[in-house]
Amino acid sequence: MTSAHSANAAAGDAVSLADATSTRRRGIDVVFRVALAFSVGVALITLGALLIDVFLQGRPRLNTELLTNMPSNRPAKAGIQSAIFGSLWCVGITALVSLPIGVGTAVYLEHYARRDRWYVRLTELNIQNLAGVPSVVFGILGLAFIAREPLSWGFTVGTGAMVLTILVLPTVIIASREAIRAVPPSLVDGALALGATRWQAIWRQVLPSALPGIATGSILSVSRALGESAPLLLLGALTFVTFNPTGLDSGYTVLPLLIFKYASDAKAELHVVAAAAIVVLLAMLLLLNSTAIVLRNHFEKRRS
Amino acid sequence: MPSPLELAEGSLLPSAGLRRRLLIERLVRASLAVVALLSVGITVAIVLSLLRPAIEFFAEIPLSEFFGGTTWAPLFVPPQFGVWPLVTGTLLIMVIAVAVAVPFGLGVAFYLNEYASSRVRRILKPVLEILAGIPTVVFGFFALYFVNPEIVQRFWPFGQVGTFSALAAGLMVGVMILPTMASLSEDAFSAVPGALRDGSLALGATRRETCTKVILPAAASGVMAATVLAFSRAIGETTIVLLAAGSNPQFTLDPGQGVQTMASFIGFAGIGDQPTGSTGYKTIFAVGTLLFLITFVLNMISVRVVKRYREVYE
Image (cartoon, rainbow over all chains, first blue to last red; front, side, top):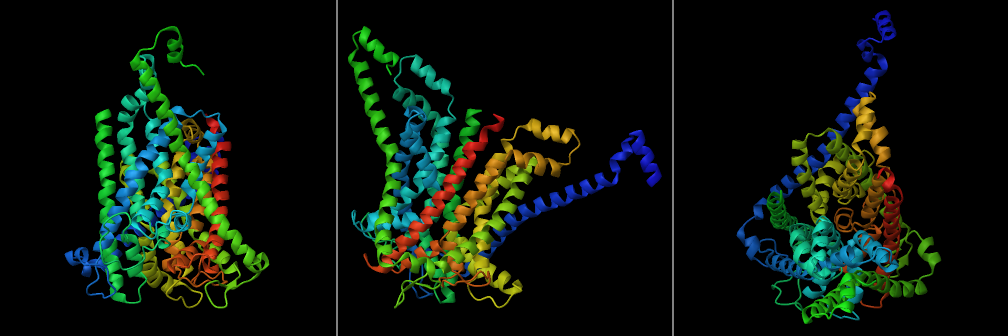
């Protein structure tokens, strides 16, 4: 084999591809491929294990009483009704407030702002940075600025929703900018050439074509508010609230916080309730996200 | 800067309609600018709200005690303010999480970008999006009631593991960051011109060599930015750590122990509803300032890295 090998190599024959170095390199290639598959496996298996574990743990309490009962520290009676309504209130308000502000900022940055101005660059940098601030820090802001002096809104739905709005705003802005940037500039140029003002071009051409992208991105950002827990730890949501919110000044709890409360309770039966509540939370998230995906697919098909 | 319309205004008599449109234009422009400035206002509000109580805190607690002590018990009587247990706790969680998120995230990104067929990609990407959308409280629950008892307690070889462990929390923080790491790296990989990859393969390099010796260096800026972001998110994670690593600040680097991080301390102290103006209340802000500063620096590094090295191939 060795002599044949050297002869082949000298002749530049195709067989020389199978020499020792090449075999080793291919071996490494196989190992690498296995390592990559393993990485994917880690992600998939963890996700699968998590979903199965939560479902199995929560199954004994997955019934309508879970949804209709109010939170309680007595395992037999413990439910999540006020938390579902609290979450819907908070996330609904967050969507209503963050959407116009986020899209407005995106329109300004994409179509009005001049990139060479320092305050425009500062705003852009600031948004990038805000997107990376740990969510618990927004809780501190809420505690110091909104719940107490100077706004003194207390531990209410309004405070919670305002903090969540601030939290998702950077991602709404970034997603809307991407959607707006994807609209061909020729649309704006054409409208301007025909004598439209910039705002007319944006309102009648850019925003309608960017709408699906904005909607998808915003739903995905707002769904983050539905699962968020850290900032609300500081904002009084971690209690057994036995009434549904009636307005912005109402006391409240939200699903992730109630899950936290049940999960960290000493009674093991309440951990079952936590797991069941997680299933409900995941179902709500899935509903929200699949709406976004259906929207995206629907409009992508229409465009092409 | 006179726009064509304004020139027209000078030469022709503007109609009422045109004047109205131009007025609307100006109003819209001004109000959008105000809206855009809101985000700057948020940052200012964060800094202001953090700073004052933090300064008051350091007026009461000397820096030498804060950085000199190794016992963190700010809510106890008598309180102790040695921040090192929080620092080691944060370090521990961060290292474990990044050790999971960065290599496996890169692995997933390479797999998606270089190996997977388009059919596999179509299935895998939404699945990763689902993983990215799992709320942190769910990861925390899973870490506390599955990963710790079923995996860490059974297989940790160095001593007894209690209900809470930095390892279980850190592993789940890592899994939480993994999809972000993967998708940012994948973006960076797919920005590498195809000619580089094709050239490398044509010269006889294996796929692995093309990945690690051509694509990875070419996408280094994006990958570095993603890694820095992974660090930043690991440091800032609150709920997973609070649930799965407990709330006992220990001066230790043993992953089998429960720990408290800067972020999880803030969450923990916030639950207790500290009265405004008390030292416990101010402690939240002092630690918050530290956390904000660290993540701020990391975010800026990430932005800089992308900006400086990105456009090499464009």
